[in-house]
Length: 170
Length: 397
Image (cartoon, rainbow over all chains, first blue to last red; front, side, top):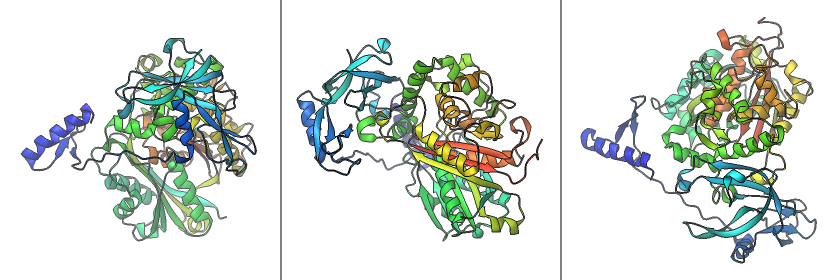
């Protein structure tokens, strides 16, 4: 829970004692607000069954795309079927070579679930296999430039301690 | 398909609407719209409710709204096209009337974003793209997505952060005359430049705010309008397209392909020359969720050549008296951006503009009797372009 919500919760607790109901007052408009007594925590479970090899690849330090064995279409994020020619025959293709940073930003105001990180740079790299990859950039933010040469790098995301991929300037 | 016109419309005061519930907010927009249309709630045969939700408590906004407006048991549906939900609602309402299934239909947008703390809202909008591959690991935010476009645009065409701020200056200027706008303060380029970064190179004043609001549009068939005897503004063309969920699957970050496609379709349907649309339109509402978005819109709509959108704002050509006035209501930037209600509010604004009902500093000169609304959902994930027209011309000179 954020500090902002924590404060509102305290105010609602006070109000329950005084007014009998969890009514808080918006400071700017003086409007009365009911402070929700039912908290919902959301965490999803997302199927990766058909692209599990992508995560096996991360364990070996590799970032995989998929390629259709019939028409040659390449997919990143990896796709288990070809929506271009309707084939289900896909092969794995490592995105190992040097790509180009096409654009980037630095996230200063973060989502609640990312608020524990320092400001992070996100970029999009164009890879020679014909796909783009969006990821955090592992490098000096000040030296970034559209058009610079980059590679993909696999390493752990802390503090969550799981493998993911980065864009790394060469 | 039958011709469909708008006979009434209204949007509420936009802003932090802690003074009203979702029901009360919907009623506020509906009451004025239906009064203007001079119809009874019982005459509404179907409603389309646009709402993004997540940040607000109600999971079934369409039934909440139907009950609140007293229009049960008429059929209804909730639609979502992210920030273009409102235009998608108008499109569907149009189609219900055009196909002969109803004579009078309501499109109403509602959003209560401030029911959640701002960080939660930032999180919800950041998830509005591809959750698994762009949000879960990389924490993109809505400003972050558009910042990727801003960086690419600025580096390709040599635009500066100051140039982007010019859009904010214009839209705050017009919002200062709009009593329903969230922000009514005029700002300077310096003020915009000194605001903190939200997603480099975009700063606080490059961004539209978190907004509560509702907007309602009453649409009717040509037969109904003729017997009703009220002047209508006609929907003369709608274009729509989608862009990839993953931004990484796009080739170009200097414009929105979906918006270009939607514009071409709308121009073809409305008989507007795609080579010089600005000369045939009296004004436009464009989707300025961020300043860079308005500049890209000028180019995607063909108001400026590729790379020359910045020139248009620097030369003040999108103020009144310029090539084409844009966002005379203050735009998303300063009027506010209640996601699901934004699209209808653009249509309402143009409806009143074309009829000369806006008055004062914000009223555009109506010569051609045609206006355009450009409404983008997400980061070019959805695009809707709607062209409205009057039957008469040269009426408000």
